[in-house]
Length: 134
Image (cartoon, rainbow, N blue to C red):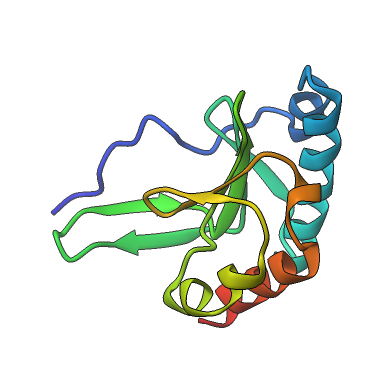
């Protein structure tokens, strides 16, 4: 099966400009902190994926269904209601670390956080490192 054509692809847009454009001050600060944490965890520079997702690293995914795509190792998007974190919900995180993370919601492979003060950043950093070792 050929690679799926995604609407969300890596772009040349400026991550710095995007971060500066976030209207909410708390979300702008949290986004800068997340970008720093993910860059440190991955050793990769941030890249824009579509108009509003910041991704770190590159990974080629192939699902059991045969669907194939290029994606990022981990990333996040500051949405109106919350920060959406991608690539951190693996089995180990769900089994242990999420219990001590703090206040959050989960979706289909995503972690939703209102603000970083609601969670334990040390636990989040452990989740990021765990993601990279699996």
